[in-house]
Image (tube, rainbow, N blue to C red; front, side):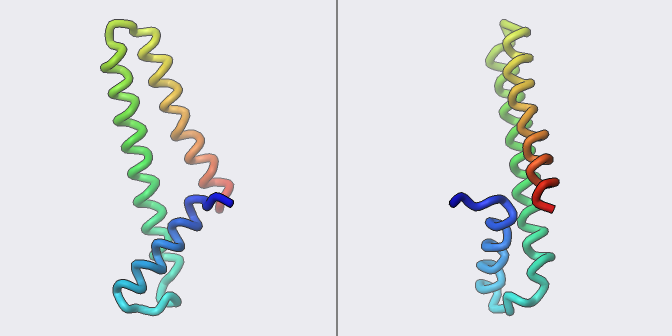
Length: 87
């Protein structure tokens, strides 16, 4: 079974708390929220970077560049939908 983003964030939060030597019961939601938010921001930034690279690679063909960029941009909608479903 694959893990969703929240499960990964919670697992990482526990690892961070262990490294810091603090109880896993010490603000677990807040730590997991911070980890999850960081991952989301990184995914969105990477999606934006990929869209920009696609536009640059296809600058000689504006139609194709826009199509590739639009497909990459759909990732943001998928991320938001998945996060909404997790809440």
